[in-house]
Amino acid sequence: SRVLVMDFEDGMSLSATPEEMKAVGVRPKAVVQRFSEAYAEMAFVNGFLHCDPHPGNILWRPAPGAPGGFQMVILDHGTYQELPEQLRLAYCRLWRGIATSDGTEILSAAKSIGVRSDWLRSKLLQEGGRGRGRQAAGDSVKE
Image 1: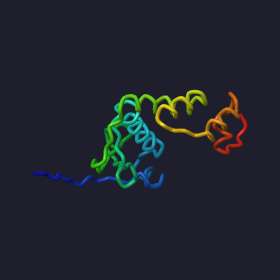
Image 2 (image 1 turned 90 degrees about the vertical axis):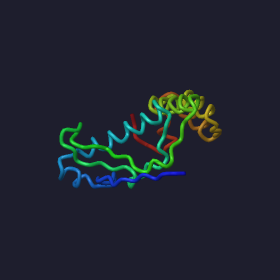
Image 3 (image 1 turned 180 degrees about the vertical axis):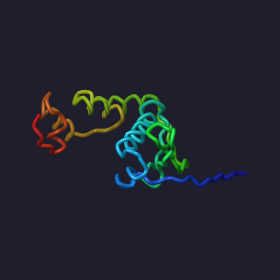
Image 4 (image 1 turned 120 degrees about the vertical axis):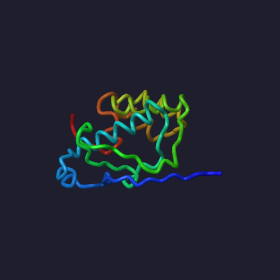
């Protein structure tokens, strides 16, 4: 037999406006940062990933006494994926390469998770050491 347990959780969507957040004393940047940190921990540390993180499934609610004055509420736990350790580590390397503009690491990590892209390879090689990724993304910002 199966049992379905449901509960109502009060809160506001991640799509709430900054004005709505500020009206209850919550900093919008703190909400975004908390969600980013929680999701990054799922992906990069635990390898256990909520696979439906749209604004309707991620709520925040004012909570005096909680860090930042709010709690984050994750709903709809029906779809999770456990990442194999090798994939989790390759995904970490991919994002580290992106964050540090290391084209060699990006290509190596992408290859290890099964991404084959001649376009990506040519763009990263074309750009050389500085500003990797910016030209490929169409970003014309000068360093």
